[in-house]
Length: 553
Ligand code: TNX
Image 1 (cartoon, rainbow, N blue to C red):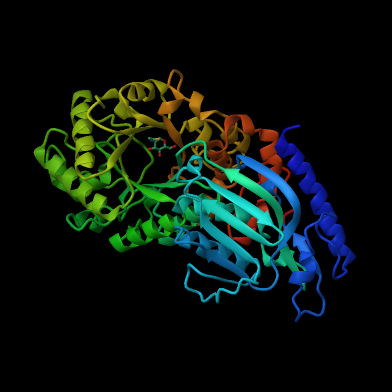
Image 2 (cartoon, helix red, strand yellow):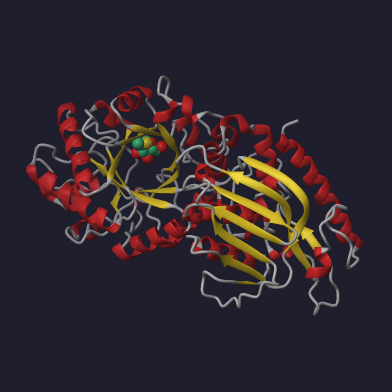
């Protein structure tokens, strides 16, 4: 039996003993499964409470998604009673993780204070604490790995970088109750004791939101970023422009939003992000460990730009606005110098607004561009992105061009041939196979969505190996995984939730957890328990019949 299974068995035993202790109702009942290590219940019993209902073990390491690399259970639990100190030690880059933890603790009804976020912890060593501390010597953790140690007398999160601390905090958050309603009056949540060491499989773990086909604003985008971060996804790719709309204000070309943002699929009002909106999203996501990757799709998928700026058309005449769902009919005029001036100005502005390393230039389905012109256009667009100090990303079609001029990332979605060519040409690959992770697809015939890439139930989204997604590509060329949500048929926040949950956590585990550590039968059991968290946090989800969900409340 692998160590993790033993740990799981121990935890189940522990949980049962805690529940028994709690329902026994006695103050001073042990909650540590009969182990040694002091009596944290006595120590933590709030003196003001007349009816101390005892600790409630609310989470288990088994339930954490994505499944951590290594878990070892220990004896006892850390009881979250009284005010918990959340402290950042020795200047570790953990302020955002500490704030996140305090936010989650508050949602669970736990008071917290502490250093590193300016909320006035007095430094008293007597209080039970969660300490975030640098693990610089532990090079194997990389920028995103973390260690977690939970003991009856304290919790420690160790990492080397900002994002590692955030992921450690997100694991802790999943051990907290889904909501304060889970804790009986006078009780307190308790975290199971144990050790976690956790490092991601892939560096790129993304979700894409199409805000062009239907517009979604700051709040909706930030909700997606929160969800991504909760499951340790570290990229939010925003598909900002398409035939149906241009969604980011450009100082140099106000027409793009004055005209090009006022349409969307089906004839709705459209909309756009101001540059301040965009900056806000980028900063909010950054604090959550998520890098925004903006996409300006070119030279095809450009009808909204062509409507707004007639000079981008070879004949100088603006086409009609487009609110349908077809693809492949528009193209920038790839032979005109003014097109490249436009690309330089737009990419330059976007690079200035974007602290992340990547700018996505699209490049997909340019069926209205002559192949020769397409190759020249892509070469110049990639060069423009590099000149702006960023690494270019493009859909797999860019693999039909010469990619040898510099670093580049290609995103596989439908055809392994250009994706493999891109990798041979030096590109790193993001795997977004449409028949696995296009989350705009229906789960089954009864749910709404697209269907051209097949039906994608949670099991299908979970059960594949990114290293094998494009035959013949060396695993070292596989940068990671991304799940796109195209929005032709996605019009509301509820639609976003239903498409992403539960499939996004499934994809997150594909991207984080080693292939040999993942099994559908096990994931399917674990994910059911997350529904209560989603609902408490205000997200809806699809009740995929393959998963034994708790009864609807
Ligand atoms: C293909 S994927 C597209 C998108 C559509 C999507 C709908 C890709 C690079 N292009 O333009 O929105 O299918 O499923």
